[in-house]
Image (tube, rainbow, N blue to C red; front, side, top):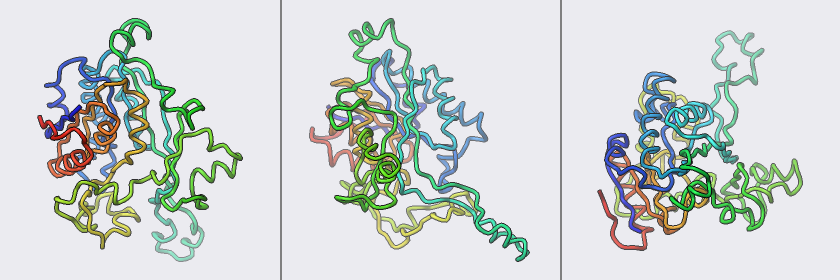
Length: 340
C-alpha cells in the first residue's frame, strides 16, 4: 500500500478525512515544553490551553478511527498527564501507559552552588541541582469506544484488540508495558550504563521479560539520514536553531557534540524505526492503515510501510515534510508516493 503524505496543519487536514477510515493512530505530538525554543512545541499559553489544543486534534483522530481503534501517543514525562487528559477529553478510553526506558538521556540540571554569589553560602549548596537524568518516555495507549462487544467489533471493523502474539518477548512471553533500549555502545556485552544491564544487575535475568531494542534509544545518524542524500545539509549549530533566552538554549546539552556535524535529517525528536515497528504491530490489524497527524521526519511512515500497512502522515512544517518524504520514499518498495 502506498503511503499518503500531506503537508498542512493537522487539525485542518484531519477534517477532510472520512470518518472511520483508519485502523490505528501512532504519533509523537509536541510536548508543550518549547523544546529547543521551537514555536511548534510551545504550550499555547498554559496547561489548559495546551490540553484543549491537543484534545481538538485527537477529537478529529477519534472521528476518523474505526470503532475500537487504538491510539499510541508519545508524551514527555513532565507533561504526560496533559497528554492523557487531552486523550480523555477527546473521547478516548485510556487503556495503558507504556514506559520506554533508556540510559542515554542527559541531565538538564542547574548547579545551584554556581549561581550563588556569596562563596561561603555557595559551598553549603555544592552538589545540589534542579533535575534528574531523563531515562524514560511515555506512550499512552488509548482506544476509541467499541461498537458492542470486543468480539463483535473485531469481526465488523478489524479493530478493538491488540496483536499479542506478534509482540511477544522472544516469541514466548506476554508483551509488557515496559520497553527497554540498549546504549549505542552495547555489543555482545552491555556497557555499565545500559538500562538493560542495570535491570539485570538489580534482578538477575529480569530483562528477558521485556522487549529490548538494541541501539535504539536514539536512532543512529545513518538511520536518521537514510534516503536524504538529495537534501541540503545543515551544520549542527544550524540544525538546533533556538530562540535567544529560550529554555532550550539554557540546557547543558543544547547542541552538545553537534556543532561540527553536517546533518541531513535535523528534526530534533527522531524516533527509532525498530521501536515504531513494535508499537505499530501491537495496535494495527493486518492490512490496516496507520495515521500519524504529527509526522515529523517520517519514522512512523517508514515503519508502517516496511510492515505492509497503509499510512497517512500529516506534517505542518515544510522542511520536515521534505525530510519525511525522502526517508519514506527511500524505504517504500511499492513505487511512487501518493501525495495528497
